[in-house]
Length: 533
Length: 73
Image (cartoon, rainbow over all chains, first blue to last red; front, side):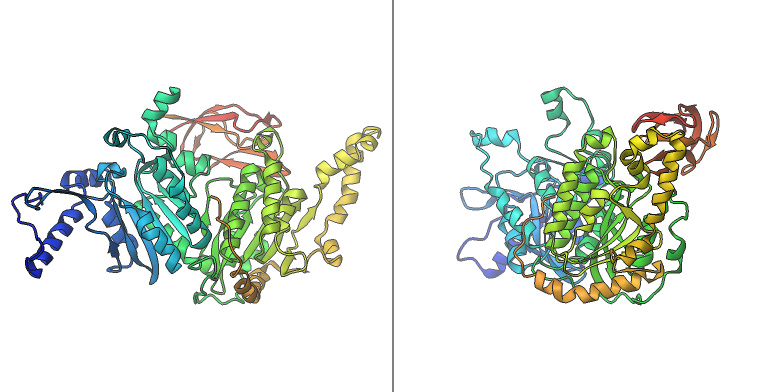
């Protein structure tokens, strides 16, 4: 619908019916966003418009829009509307699975979603409301940030003053923040998106960077297309900048909904229990033999986790990055929990710098949202060698240790196989030393300060070297120590609460989570810091 | 026909190479076992195709990221 420049516009003194007509008329103009051509371009690129996105992610009919008439309006001499461009942002309140949320998204059909001369953005309505009402905040980002054209129009280049970010940091302290990166996102919108507790981008549709290919080419002469520079392979697989990848926009919406479903409305609440119908005393038979008797062989750790949690429903975060550590959310007896696991199929489950960072971040997230943590550990120690050294593995490992020590949420830990050295300490040190800090061992459990193989070679080096047959001598010492590795010996000393039948893992984890609830209620009242992505 | 390089995921010692040049491999077929960090780490093909080059043999040390196979689809 093109704007009708001949239309006589409502003025004071005219009828209320005429006013309502004009409200309807402007809303109609606003709902057309950047116009049919731009909408068509959005659709032919396989992308939804921001209004379609909001409609799809929210419960049907629940959207309460704020500022649908906000836009750049120009009037002629007699006060009739001459030009109108809606603000490039759509926002409001709504519901996801019956829960209130604040939501907003960039309208890419208008000036590429870049802020223009209309002030319409999340800081006016959605961000403050999410904080005041204590409800999750969802942002669907598709904007490219500051435009040099805007500087020319303003005749002034503003000094960045940083004030626009404070609300975003406040949000990170108080409510769940989830971002869908819906297209090419650069500059300030990219930073807004990353200022979240959960980020998801779409395969071959989304890219994120401080600046896109033309600026990169001009600055450093590197010629890459936008997918190579900031697509999912770069940022979900290689850099870990974005948490998850989705196959489609619908998949991204589902992941955002799922993420929110495990969290409470604010960092001062505990997550609501949901009836899942999975009995807490279920004994998964397959757990008994899931760990191979050959300790050099691996197994599927995600299967292990799925066998334990309610209905096998495990929502993983940062699945494709720093693979030695697994992080995600699940329910046990209906209670929401954070899960930390090891993947022996990736770097043998050893902690490198990235895995340490992934662990520390995830733990901060669980601590902020008062989620108890369930650990399935199979960690041979820090990853060794030059590649791991370049990732500042031990400094980041120490950071993981500190994250554990500072976190106050309770944990239950199942030492399903290996737990060696400071890397395992980083995870073991979660939970107050005298508190609800339950540690169980599986029969495959083996642990220590250093694995026998490397440990013997180092500590008995002189003795081995001076032996007649050094290899045989080393093996002899190794065999002597191997007897000490039995988890029974550690159980007799009280290193673990108990040595258990793996099939009891679920039952014990469910008991733990229930017992931890009063403590979680107490912890929810602590002031929280912003979780740094 | 496109060719793909398979990089070693870890630094370690090759203990098994079940494929040879000219073999047809499917996605998820085992290409090599590398002993590292006291584990036998299995490397699986991410594509289906023909093995053009095998750059490792048993008992050889490999470095993380080193190209160990070339496969064409």
